[in-house]
Length: 236
Image 1 (cartoon, rainbow, N blue to C red):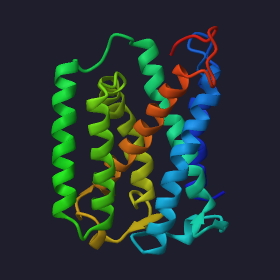
Image 2 (image 1 turned 180 degrees about the vertical axis):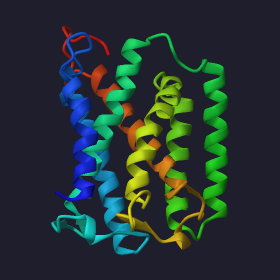
Image 3 (image 1 turned 90 degrees about the horizontal axis):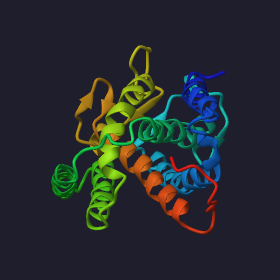
Image 4 (image 1 turned 30 degrees about the vertical axis):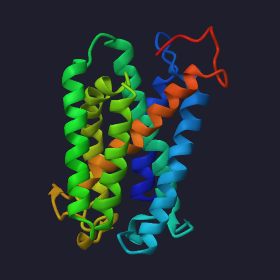
């Protein structure tokens, strides 16, 4: 088993097993969660294929099993399923066990609009850096959308994202070269700001925020729609 595949499966396995926990019973929402993850993953995989072909980032074959689809190793495809599932589970588990804990709405709005404006400016100033430009343009768009639609999940996500960042830094740290001889995933620094948290490009945090919160936006839409709605489900 490759190191990258092992990280994917380890990240996914424990949240998946706890999805059957009787009180929260998170597994009841499996359709909404998995379909939302697949929708968001499709967007990010297309983005990933283009950036891999353009040399914005790439993969070290020494840490892979060798199966590639559209220029991406199979481990990278699984990343967009395993990591979002584990991270979104953390978000909803926190929300279930601490239902009254969230950032006050006024403070959340200040954070949201400040981040959206700042990231948009950073993106425009770094027009020649592909990862920075597209990453921050998309993230700032998500934040502007959430601000103007008064999204109720965002004040909670600001807290859960800080929790998610702990396993994120461990897994992504290993992928980008922490604790191992060479990175599993390498980045072309001419396409990003060159600012790293340990071995992780700072843009990765924004990339993760967009991917995870994008899935939560769609999950909440599905929960409210008649497509999957079941009145007997327990709200999580």
